[in-house]
Length: 114
View 1: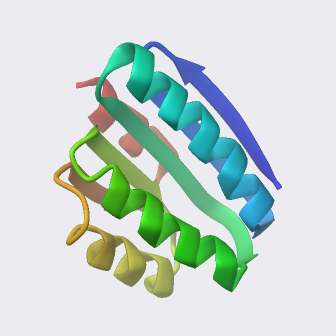
View 2: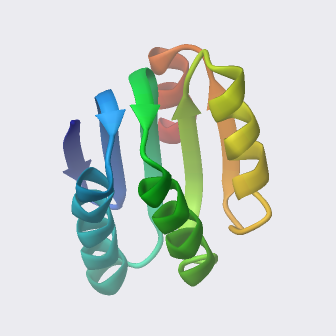
């Protein structure tokens, strides 16, 4: 399950429990709308309460990242999971955004606001 918040060119999500393909499709739809009508987007991905993710969601994430490689300014990932940190590092190969991993939500929000 995810919660989504968005203002201007920023989209923030928090994943609670499992991150499924249906959740990702919801995020994808909003981000594509923001890109179409507002240009580049900043993302805040709070995975601090994510328990797991589905394989089909991970595959969709890779496809989406490649399709929108130049559409993001900054991406902040909040996690304490080494696996998610590695995934974010790998994702940098697909996007031209400044992508950083944080273990604290407030620090991620401050970085995006700067």
